Image (cartoon, rainbow, N blue to C red; front, side, top):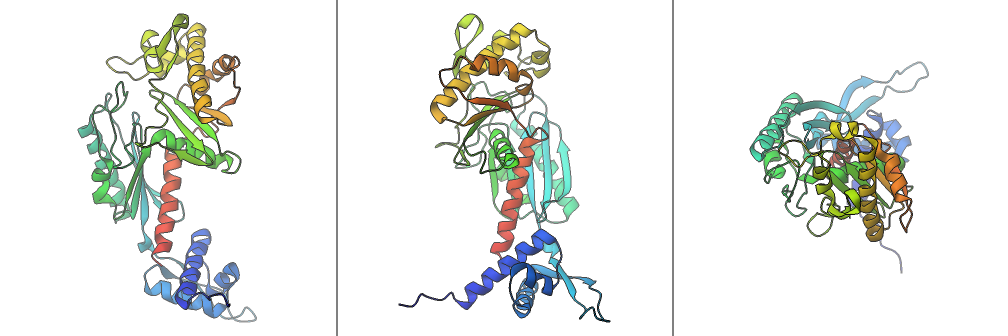
Amino acid sequence: MESAKPSVDLVRSLTDEHVLRALMRHRRLTRAELAVEIGISKPTAGESVRRLTERGLVADTGERTLGGRGRGRVGSYYALAPTVGSALAVTIAPEGVVAECVDVYGDTVARAVRPIDRPARPSQVSSAVRAAAAEVAAAVGQPARLAVVGAADPVDRATGRLVQLPDAPFLVGELDPVAVLAPYADGPVLVDNDVNWAAVAERDSVGAERLRDFAYLYLGEGLGCAIVNDGLVRRGRAGLTGEIAHLVTAGPGGRAVRFIELFEELGLRRSGSTAIDTERLLDSPAATHEAIGTAVSGVVAAVVALADPQEVVVGGSWGPALIEHIRAATESMPRQVSVRSAGLTVEPVLAGVRAEALRRLRSSVTASS
């Protein structure tokens, strides 16, 4: 029996997708260059460019190749049309709100920052997110095709709402980033926990094939953990996988204590908040660092027992500074695992959010071809 041949429409659709992705990689190409890049005939490339131009996805740049005197015919350069739009990447953290517009080439074309008070209230955070998103939208001149958000709070995976848990150090109350950002994005708004995005960025910086099973401990003003298995972040039924603040670990004198409560006992919380005072922690004596390292090792032991990671990556504002104390304490664990500091240290959460926004933007553009 003869196998079914692909339809003409399917072949055209795949060709158009290849043309769009080639222009995403190279920014501008002639029809002849597209044919060579993709491995299709020049007439086929020309027909694809014509279709995509009619749909407003590709535009003639007005630039021409040199022609004549043995150089061949003059060729027109084509690029993605400006109307393909951008994606909105947003982070919500104690340090403030950051909003960026990312174009289809991965360039940040607008950025806005808004401060947040501590402890943060939903109304204030909503205003900060709205103001930052409005600023970058005005700079770009049109709403984004979609938005991706990283937030320093647990995220309900079904609704995208931020959820307040007991002793949460950042947001006091619940917040709905999907609703807040809806006026600034024509398409979907994806929200996830900040530690998950930092873990994704760390995975991608190393290479997804090399780093497929690991735990990412975020040790800063708040406490969090992302679990990555087979290269994918595991979120759990409600999106609360990795909420380690209430794990029981070893406190001062060997007493059992909830992880978040350790910092209150050590006098390392910010006034009127459960947030950890990073500066005071880093300036504390070696004995305090050893006690914290021991407590972290208890958390690592629990993560290893349940998730079986190939390594544990430690990030955050103070975790890497105490890495030697953490390693020393983990040496007595019955199941050994490599513990190292995060390699990506510059805005790791935003790096993960930005990368996902770019991936979804490109998929959205090719899906409309």
